[in-house]
Image (cartoon, rainbow, N blue to C red; front, side):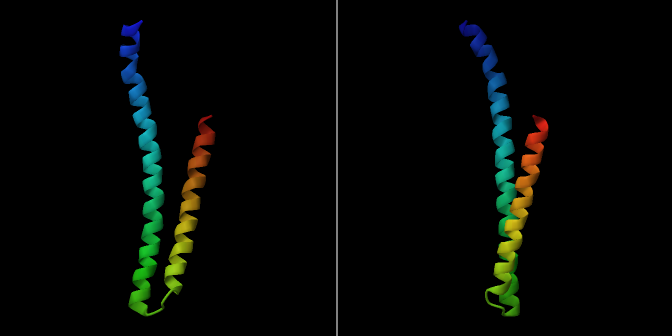
Length: 81
């Protein structure tokens, strides 16, 4: 009995690592897209002198990007069922 559990451990561990890596990838993708648009808006504000306008636009566009990524993930997850 103990031997069977030891042999199955790598299979369970491998599937767990794959699942974790998928979710970490999604989180990184969401964070990177949001940060990119926010920092781009901040940079454009410093260059053009428009204090909060482009930063706020970057926040809105970043949030829209996050929503699109989440919808894509939900569609993919529903398709696998």
